[in-house]
Image (cartoon, rainbow, N blue to C red; front, side, top):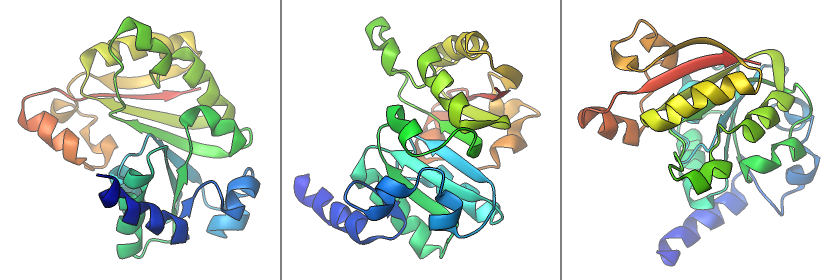
Length: 217
């Protein structure tokens, strides 16, 4: 397994669209994404816990007038997203390798226009609540970097996590604009832009319902 990951780590070290420890941009990019990386004034969209970057790349293809940043701590996963973006010739994509908890180190207040969180680990046990990416601590962190008129989009196949999140969004002073517990049979279906990750496709084929919400700080 380590031998399989090594080429991906080498790719990350060499790829311009991967920002990680050891690269100059890693230390100076806070508040400077448009100037130092994207070289434009377009809106910035984050995908948190982006995994292999399927959603980040999918959104970037559909919205060339926006800048997209996929964030994950797993370097081997980020490498796959980076390669997808390069192969597609996308210049409006970057990948940041860092824990989500360090978000404030890379984005200034209200620098971000939109955030997506797609099928995060549900961390189902009670003792894992602090790891859930929709707990109130994390939601309060996101609202610091998200513009006051920015939207937050969340999808999950896990009903328990979704029920939990409906409460925490309200507790963290977000306004839930709309939601559904069955996205694929909802009038909200078009809002996910018909971008389906590998695992989401498997979930749907097995009969799982996809939960979705849109919220605003």
